[in-house]
Length: 376
Image 1 (cartoon, rainbow, N blue to C red):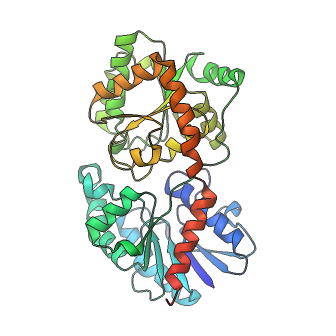
Image 2 (spheres, helix red, strand yellow; image 1 turned 180 degrees about the vertical axis):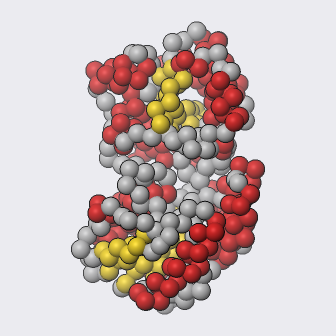
Image 3 (spheres, helix red, strand yellow; image 1 turned 60 degrees about the horizontal axis):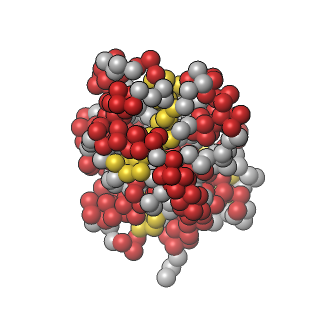
């Protein structure tokens, strides 16, 4: 088969979320299926590391599709033009967007529908585009893949997609995430927190990630316990709102909140593995890859009791109400003051993490592709 794939999120040194999913799954699919030809569609110059095998043909389609007008131009005009030349047997999209007017089977990966539940977190122009086109993208796809049972039920409910047309393909975790020895952890702590233990958050500073309440909970934790623990925030500040900036500025313990910005995967793995706990309490999440990264590093997790997160952690984390800074604070206290709970969480996580791997994700996505072209 000739297979065309939307890979615009494959950007060197910026593989987060959808980009990480795309890299890990498409790399494996290309390598594991040498008899097929894969056309990877980029909206900019690509790095050679994304040419995964000899059966990969990269195609650059201008222009960089990074806001609604260019999304429409790219997906509705530019990509269909290239698709007509390639004439693939199937089209795969890993980010929910699909070309208009193409006739071959489409496998569309929709990670979540956050904008349907939290429209106030999305810029008006972006929200208008999502509301207008994402239902169409879903309804014109031959098959939909998504990363959790929660997201599957959400897509069925919001867009009236039959359950038989949706496949759950859980995310995985990269091999770089693993436990560190005590002396290795000490080096990381010395580098980032002057040797103190720390909570870690991993992700963007988007409003749905609930950073404002995390700051509030951390301040309450520090006041209540007088603990020297720090809070390390790992991720790009591109969505840092005025509310988050204000919450940080007025935090009495802001000197113990460390922003690292985006870091290489190797540094990220060391930060997570050296943390006392992952504090990951979004308001909405389709999956939450940092949960698995912490599991792989034998680091206990505090996370939200809503959307996909209870499904992903499977009882191997402390759950809290993300809308309550008091509840988040209580989880912080419990995980630092009860060593038995901490031990139990790490043991349960070691079992839960066996359910997830990028090899399994790639196999499941490939099964979706085969279903999409099946005549049965």
